[in-house]
Length: 335
Image (cartoon, rainbow, N blue to C red; front, side):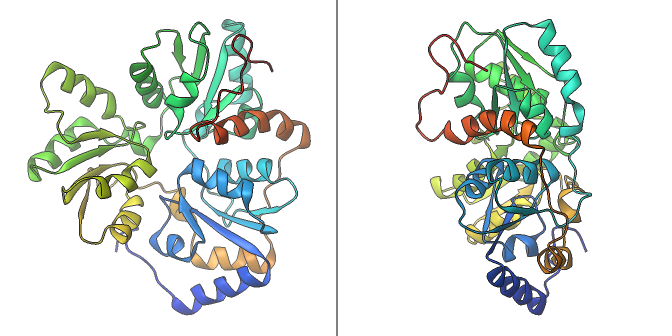
C-alpha cells in the first residue's frame, strides 16, 4: 500500500468531526496531506488559501494538517486562537535551508534590497522579510515592488528562477535552497512519463527541479510547448475544468492527486514521479488529529515580538493576488 492510498476509518472520522464541532474547531489540510486527512478537513488548499482561511475563521481552534511553518503562519494571523499541529515532527526541508542569522548576513551584503520570502520559511525568517509569497502569487508580489528596487528572493531556487524569468527582472538575487521532493522530479522522469502518455497535458509546480530545464528546452524548440503549464497547486486544481483534455501529468507532490481525482472524476491524472512523496506531510494521521482535538495538544505559538514583525510580510502575501494595490508606496517599502 502506498501513502497515496487512504487509510479510512469512518468511525474515527465521525469522532473527529464531532470533536471539532464541540470545540468550535476548524480543520485545515494542505493539498499534499494523506487522502483521509483531506477528506476529514473543513478546507483543503495551498499555503495561500490556508493562510486566508486561518485569518478569517471564526473558530476558536485551528487544527493545522500541514507542516510547522504553516501552523506558525496561522498562529501569527490569528494570535487569539488556539493553533494545533497534530504531529510536531511535521517539518520542511525547504524551510530548513535558511535561518534568520543567514538572512541578516545576506541582507547586509545587499543594503536596501527588498526581501521576498516564500511562505515555506520559519517565523523568524518571515520577521526579517518585507514580503511573503506563495507559488500562486510570487509573480504578483514581485510585480508589486518598484522595478528599480533590488530583490532578495528566498529560499527556493527553482521558484526564484521562475519568478525572475516571468517578470524579466535582472535585479533578483535567489537563495540556493530547494525542496527535496520537488528537486527529485527531474527531466528524466518527465521525458519518460510524457513518452508513455502522448497528448497528456503537463502541469509543473515551479518548485520542481524540472521546471527550469523544461522551459529552456521549450525556448530552444527541443520540447513542444503545447500543453505545458507551470502552475501553483491551486492552479493545477483549476486547470482540468479549463480544457477538454482528459489526461494530465502532474509534477508535484503526489498528495494532490487525491483532490484532483475527487474534483475531476471523469479525468485522468498521472504522477510525473510516483515517488514524489513528502514524508513530513504524511506524518499526520487520523488518530493524531483526534488526539490533538481531544487533548488540545501540540499548540503552536510564536513570540509576540517575532509575530509582530512577521505579520506585516504575511499580510502583504495574503492581500496581493486578490486585486489589491501594493502596500509599498511608489518609492519606499518601509520596514
